[in-house]
Amino acid sequence: PDLPDLVVVGSGFFGLTIAERCAADLGLRVLVLERRYHLGGNAYSEFDPETGIEVHKYGTHLFHTSNERVWEYVNRFTSFTNYQHRVFGRYQGQVYSLPMNLALINTFFGKSHTPDEARALIAEQASEIDTRDATNLEEKAISLIGRPLYEAFIKGYTAKQWQTDPTELSADIITRLPVRYNFDNRYFNDTYEGLPVDGYTAWLERMADHPNIEVRVDTDFFDVADDYKGKVPIVYTGPVDEYFDNCEGRLSWRTVDLVQETLDVDDYQGTGVVNANDAEVPFTRELEFKHLHPERAASYKPGRTVVVREFSRFAEEGDEPYYPINTAEDRAKLLKYRDLANKEPMVLFGGRLGTYKYLDMHMAIAAALSMYDNKLKPHFAEGAELK
Ligand code: FDA
Image (cartoon, rainbow, N blue to C red):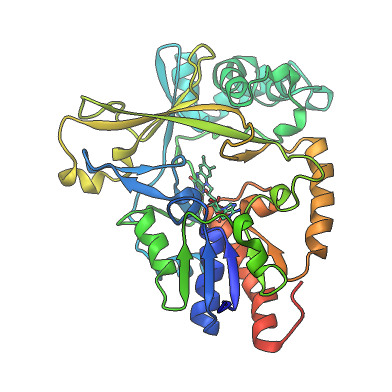
């Protein structure tokens, strides 16, 4: 058969960035294999036909970066709105402004504090435990922010995220718990932030829209691997353990069940994301997608809104892997898989699944651009060995 110059496994941001650079910059013919029915990986979104609301199929995706090169690159394919992400948290019938800041402290303790007063209060409450003596996540958190804030804003949420009591979680999971002693409640601190004006899928499709790129959806690489392995260079962005038949055991992940509902109200919660901090509430947060794009208000069906509740749990075989758990055992397995990956001829491993790392979109794109600069371009343009 007519072989392409390069096969890319997976059409998420990592795979599409590789495909786009190799096709547009080097004129290579790139075949992208995608096992889902659509391109785009986890950033993919669909417009709900009934309400006109863009729904992020695999959890909310907020774009932000301070990387100039990534910002310049992504703006070739989409423009961005001026959306700024803010998150709120509900606890015992009250709503608080997150991340932890002076507004939250004042509401929670029922009194106005100056920044210095608030700092002194939290330092006093945190003095209960010395950080160096903390033996688990609960003690570490108390040593950083004190028991009252820990019990309200960390304990229940963390227990639900991990399906584990925080006293049984490692203290290493958190290094810092920043508290802002001002009213700044912007969630991200990056130079650039916004959402793609006509949606994620339009952006992802424009990356793939090149005569030298073919995206084949509904195609699992493992069903066609014999056609390409050892014959053409491959960039593989699927799960690294799966590539090697889980020979060192499976890497562990958390997944999220996203339960979607269309409600008969125009506005359900007044904002995009509200965390559920109470331990008794089974979900971790509620997303109301219309608030991510207030500029589209005129195109939404009045009196209806789409809400998604997130339920976090350990991923079983067949679940979508979302967040690496990264236990000591996982790290030991990962080292072995990395060795195998380095020895695999003509295959480069990348992306969040291929490297078993949580990557934000801008990080996945930046990592793909470096793989292109440091490995693919030297190979295809100068004949350097691919490794
Ligand atoms: P990604 O997972 O997107 O793509 C990999 C693709 O490979 C998938 O489409 C998969 O189907 C395919 N594949 C795997 N095995 C295959 C095989 N054998 N054959 C063919 N295809 C195969 N980032 C951010 O910047 N802001 C945010 O708000 C969020 N929010 C967020 C929420 C949740 C719940 C998650 C899990 C992640 C985020 N992210 C995020 C991160 C973002 O999703 C991530 O950066 C990108 O998905 C990374 O792109 P990749 O291409 O690496 O993987």
